[in-house]
Length: 267
Ligand code: DGL
Image (tube, rainbow, N blue to C red; front, side, top):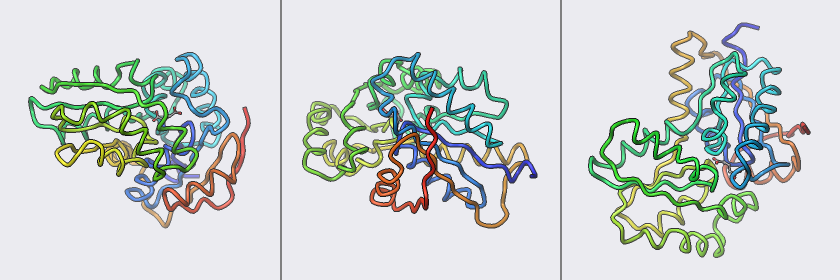
């Protein structure tokens, strides 16, 4: 197989990374994509760095066996805690979602503006976004808020139930009057709650996520290496570590993605 025809591997703890997968599919229609959702071990955001690193390494080794040419870590928690560890064991380039999220936030917040980072407890505690924003030298004030209940709501498919709005109000209403210019959805599950988050924050606040910028970065990386597959329509394959039917139903219900048969790989 020519190198350009090799698949791109994408992984997350569950459904959330599908928000990145969808953008990859839109921006790279010729690419073969393999998505892995670690549904047996979701959520990652409440686990230790050691656990997230171990899971991420296992999944990386599994995807490398599928002869991927690029790995997209479509999970902020794994990107915050395990990116270096994954890069150490990967012979192919590895892209995370933190820098794309930072890029999106800086495009939305003016100099001197305020950015609220939302994410899992592990991501917020790692301060990966604050550090990455500071490293750009941009003059923005950064606030952070962990919203751990958002992930189970999404994994349950409860994105537009009243309970989702109640939880969003509980976490975010205290920030509404604080002149926030941009909220970073620093978890790939959160774009599925974008409407209710936006409603709580009010119209002056832009809600940004890393999916678009992450897919654009993947495209650039492949173009620079001369590894773009611009042939015919690319194939999509989905693999999870548990409950494939539930994954397939929710992928369609929440994102309109038709997965076909979802394979299972248990670790
Ligand atoms: N979607 C992931 C993230 O971006 C992980 C959420 C979780 O499993 O807690 O952080």
